[in-house]
Image 1: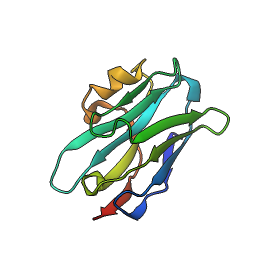
Image 2: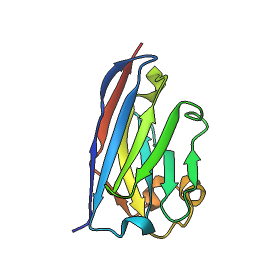
Image 3: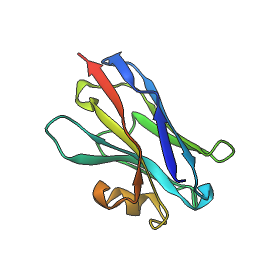
Length: 129
């Protein structure tokens, strides 16, 4: 069974940090491009950050560059998103996403999140001002 399990969301003050985790099962992990998209209240889905386990490439949305860092632990089949210097506009539900078709993180990042094959249930991130 294919499964993505997210953890690490919560409430934090502006300027604070959170780390999201996404554990994948039922996949061949090193064939995946994985990462996160988010959806804020009343807004559409936005690709945040992805990493390709094939070539190690990464993608970051302009809004998070320099603040968020994505990493992958092949031994644990887990991807992490370290989020620093959080802003109120980062408040959203964050969804872990995975796909075997996108060979690079950039390819996944420029595609609508709705085209990604697999996603998790989401974890809430709330940043207070």
